[in-house]
Length: 108
Image (cartoon, helix red, strand yellow):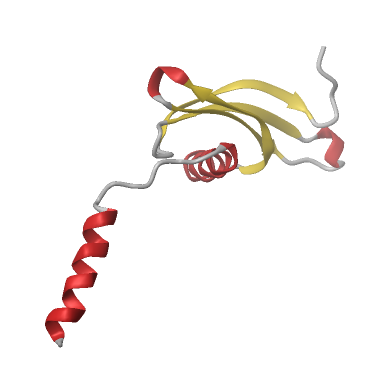
């Protein structure tokens, strides 16, 4: 009886393996990018403004908007857009700030 119980557990663990499951879809890539960036820079994410495939490494490139300097009134707060690159498993490869702007400021 113990043998029957351990065999299915081994099979399910072997099928999962030690590798992470690859990121499937733009939504999952966006979520991974936001979580990873927040962990690294400590700023709150405001949203995602772009998600696209990164063909050179079969991963994702995500533009994440973050609140860098909260101010009162809120319209004077400083936000930034970070370009985050993930591999196919959702691991962060690199990030960089590409834009910093005042909330409510229009693109020129």
